[in-house]
Amino acid sequence: MLDITAIRAQFPALTQQINQAPLVYLDSAATTQKPQCVIDTLSHYYSTHNANVHRGSHALTAQATSQFEAARHCVAQFIGAEQSRNIIWTRGATEALNLIAQSYARNILLPGDEILLCETEHHANIVPWQMVAQQTGAKVVKIPMTEQGEFDLNVFYQQLTPQCKIISLAHVTNVTGARNPIESVIEAAHHIGAIVVVDGAQGIVHEKVNVAELDADFYVFSGHKLYAPTGIGVLYGKTDLLNSMPPWHGGGKMVDKVSFSGTTYAGLPGKFEAGTPNVAGALALACAIEWYQSFPKAAVLQHLHELQSKTYAALCEIEDIKVIGYQPQSSIISFILQGVHHQDVATLLDQQGIAVRAGHHCAHPLMEAFGLQGTVRISFGIYNNLQDVDRFIHALHKAVEIL
Image (tube, rainbow, N blue to C red; front, side, top):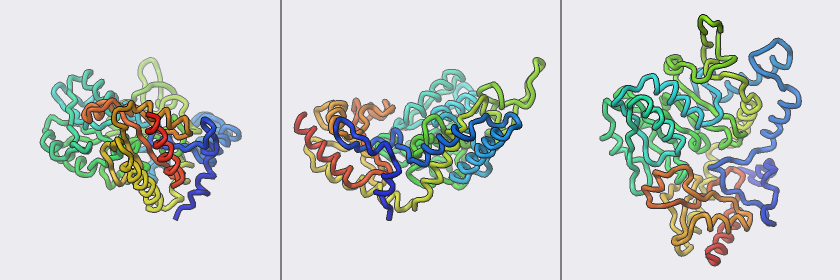
């Protein structure tokens, strides 16, 4: 069992009041709140170890470098990577996807090649591929979703041809919480020689990830959805793929030797990490991972599913509320109040201290497929409790009465 009261006490942001009401934070799919240990890690680094890494010979830079690389090792172990050098620091999943598109895809795609994407994807996993398709003459092929908003594996098999070189898909979608069949996709893609990029921004917090067992070619995620700070993320890639890719950014640290007659680049992971990295963010991400791993995974998932199940049952009792693409094994629920703009619902909830997300959730194609302009989305974190659900439902009833 989880001691949710003790867990909540570790999150200073949850103690504040919004619009004269205690904050109920239900937007963890956008970004999680941060535990005190993560905040302290950031403060401690800047207070005692602030120095650049892999540069200089003084004690502070040696300490910072050691901690920085220890954080990389922590991430590698967390996701089952073969080696620490397979972990590339990025600003987040978005930058990681762009790096793959520009450093890998741009160098292998030819006119007529295909990139397969499901219409449920986040914009960060659509736009970079459209950009590289324009640059290379390749084309992006849409995999339609099912009526329930899920990945259509049968259609995928029909669309998978020798022209397909890359499939990129979310581990877990950010609008409905649907878990995509990434294992089946990876197996089928490898059978024809295509590679698979997995956007793990949501999946990394929903289940234990082992990239070696998954046989993912690339796996990316952001720290800020995993109780870590913004501005730090991870790109995992297989060694042979990363070695084949040229650097994306040029500058200090990513070189072996620079001269006007030519420059040679560093090996992995350095060649993808030009300039001064987010050292504090990397240390705080490692802290967040260790903190999150201190709780039994099964207990965390059971807790999240209990919150979701109670919320879904209550929503079904409210007239004119329609839940969109409900996934029972998730921590996300999207819904609409029929005949009312989603932003109006969210505004009335905010006036009562309830923080939810309203809009298209960076998923225009999915909304278009559902015939919607947007939804209200609630998403739970480990710190939410049943009282949060009660307050949300009470506030929603008041909003429905007003609207």
